[in-house]
Image (cartoon, rainbow, N blue to C red):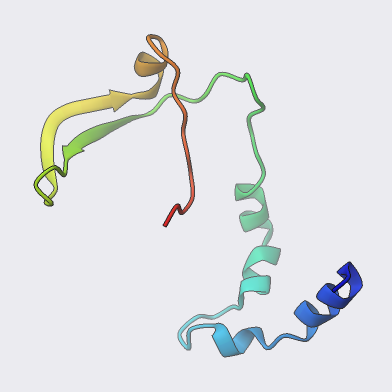
Length: 91
């Protein structure tokens, strides 16, 4: 299939057929929203300093969520070793 055939297929696809009944919009309508487009636009470039954040740490070693009382800080951790942040689904 070439790009034009794929474009036509997507244009003619019945997105409502795979959209949950309680959803007010389809996937293409959602992705066309300027706010969603803004969220998908990178604000940092490679090498830029990341914005700091802190989050509580949890222990899941026994299969349940247990607060450790410790906190992860991005900038504190990055000061001592490289940090890679991965966003998205990996399942």
